[in-house]
Amino acid sequence: MIIPLDYDCYKPTIARAIISVSQFQHQQGLPTSLPYRQFVPDAASILRAAKHSQYHGFQISSTELASSANRYLKESRWGQACREMFYELVETDADVLFGLIRSRVLKPSTLTFAAETLGQAKAQVEILELLLELLKHDSPVVREGAIYGLSVYHAERKVREELRRIASQDANVGVREAALEALGE
Amino acid sequence: MAAQLVRIIKRRSSFNLDRDEFYRVEFLNDQGEPDLSLSVFEIDPNLNLIQLQTEQLVGIGINPDQRCSVHLDGLSGWSGVLKTPTTNRVFNFKFASDTHRELQFVNNQVLLEFVFALQSNLQNHRLVDVSKTMMKSYALQQLDKHDEEWTQVAKNSEKFQIWITK
Image (cartoon, rainbow over all chains, first blue to last red; front, side):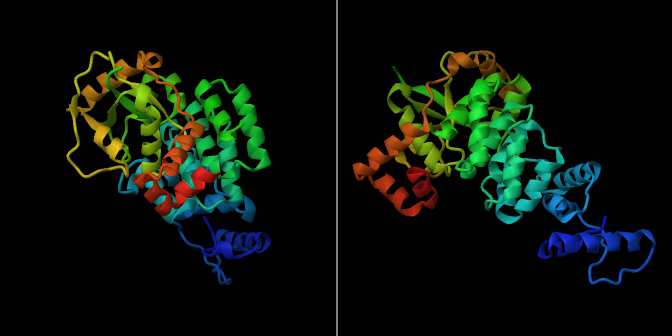
């Protein structure tokens, strides 16, 4: 995989061009002449990049993301996903937490807390979109966790619409109650 | 009604989960290990549930701000040991600290027996929900009364200041 080390500093179009050239050079076995270098990223780097990939035009396959997430969890000091890890990540490296959620390797029983905790990160459109996706998750505890995670976004029209839909239609009474209370109506 | 043991649960949707998922959501600690020392509170829910949930919510940092509780009265088929923690106060409030107890289990198997006993009859153990509005109203009443603990919280906790006004 090739990701510019400081991809976040560049406009998406420039980043996309840099990556394309770098990938081509890498595939051809050519040395990269650009100041952006090919490197073998660690699991955390790949997880961080997941948040930016759709906007910056590079692809991280779901397999690669899942294997990075599993590696990250296994090599962490907890050896598994847990709330303490999420609390620490949201303070220190919220993009990794985003990547863990995006990777789909978390079970509903931990994903619910990851979603809730991610909502404490600095408000960002990518986080909003991810939590909105989780409102449609099969597991009711995940949907409930996403409602809590969205608490700072409750004024957003899109969020209120979704909460209204859930409050009236969700199959789980606990999730409906959580949505209703979140709406404060 | 006499004092009962009350457990504040993490998810409202837990009432509809299967046993294994109920266990994983509600009874693993922050490190992801079985919680062999469960926090419970010995209170009269008719008198003190709003106070307890509000103090506990604010004491742990208001996230999320919606929870509900179950009582453990009449629950059989388990063998935990009830203890009063000897450590320092874990909450900012005397009432929540004074009523705080720990249910200790010798191993995960004994914890599972407790979890399954509770889950099999969970709806009957559910206490009346305490809404966010009720908790805010309680906190505001305490501030109006110039309660020392709540005055300190209002002064020092930015999270509380946001929560109480939004």
